[in-house]
Structure formats: structure tokens, C-alpha cells
Amino acid sequence: GPFLELHYKPTRQNRSINGIYVEAKDITARTLADKALKEREADLRALIDNMSEVFWSMDREGRLITCNTAFVRFIRTFHNRDITPGMLVGDHFPEKDQPRFHAIAARVLGGEQVQWVEKYPSKEGPRYFEVTANPIRSGSAITGVSVLSREITRRLAREEEVVKLKDLAENSLR
Image 1 (cartoon, rainbow, N blue to C red):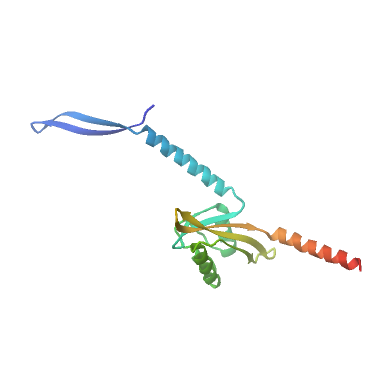
Image 2 (tube, rainbow, N blue to C red):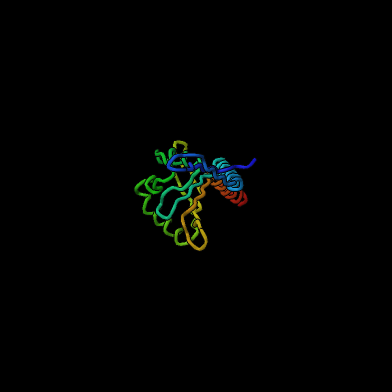
């Protein structure tokens, strides 16, 4: 059925209320559009949260706009901190890494895509992440930075093993 927005006003005669004026506005289209938007936002949130890759975005001031659960786990695991939208992302990285963080952010906010490999120590040995940072564009304006990161530790170990096997094979042929 239709969704209605109702406004009530008393009507007066000789300073006494003698009735009620009711105004009804059909807001069905707006209500259904709001519902569809909320469903799309929920679908997008589910997509982002179910990614195995680390994803986050920040505005021009460096404040976290959105992130997935993999990013929250990453910050807890490697930086022993919690982070929520609105916080300054750079503050959650070690002080020694902050100048590089801000330099990369400046490049991306200048319109450049930046890719690099990041190494993090862990109990199991070093872990490597391939990171890509892209400008967030709204029309011709750059409004922030989006970052996607995936762990490549296993891939690098396999590549290293291939090189070792290749060297071993070449040496055995000599």
C-alpha cells in the first residue's frame, strides 16, 4: 500500500478548537527508494566485509571513511590498535612509517595510483603484502584514497623456490 506523511493542525473558530485539518502527502516513491538504497548499501557492505583482501578508504584529511573486517584485524594484528571510521588512519601506523604514509597519500591525492610491497614481521616469519592505493574521484575532484592490500607471502615463497630449483637444475647440467 501507499506510504503517507500526515500533518495535523487544529482548526479554530472564536479562539476555540472546532476541528482538525489533516494534510496527507504520498511518500511511497521516496520510501521505496530509501529502502532500495539501504538494501544496496547492505549488499555493498557485505561484499566489502567478505573480501579476504584488506580494504579501506580515507578522505583528504586522512580520516577513515570505510574499511572491511580484514583491515580491522590487520591493524590489531600488526599495530596492536583498534580503528573505527572517523579516526586518522596515519596515526595507526608506527611513527617511523608515518612520513612514508603521508608521502604516498599526497601522491595519490595528486591523482597517481601507487603500488608497493610491504613487509611486516610476525611470529611465523616475515609476511608480505602487495598494496595498491587509488584516488577516489567525484567528478573532476579527488575526494580521498582507497587502498586494497593482499597478502603475497606464499606466492613470494613459491617464486623463491622456483628460482632455487631452476638454479639447482642449471648447476646439475654443468
